Image (cartoon, rainbow, N blue to C red; front, side, top):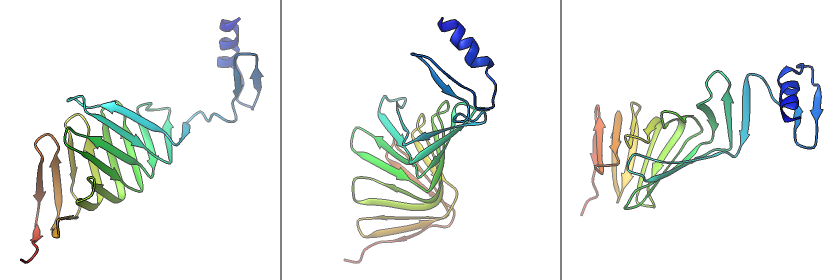
Length: 174
């Protein structure tokens, strides 16, 4: 019976025909052949050092031509290291679940639990390599110090930040 239902489901027309039984309910009008919309998705995983990460969004759209790519509205990422948690968010994003990469754009902000804050237009986080990078102007603040640069790379494994292009650092006066 299950095989017959699956066969009927796979061969049903796309005119909104509704097929239902005690086990399966299917309505083709709700499922567009080109995309799938997920409300409040949560992606969780472990990087190569087995440190957890989470990515959530208000909405995610997955197109059938590439099942590993999700277009995100208001994405929010959380990366946990042995020392602390880091947070990253933006207006829009793309998450490649297969390659474990998050691309963010629109008022991107990267912070830790409270003292560090970076703002840029676009950023990419590679969860496997634990590298956050961007080629757009960035403004960073920590402990009353401000840095402005044309690009950046944050190496989570090494606790190292490299600013690229013209960079300006303002330190607090004592």
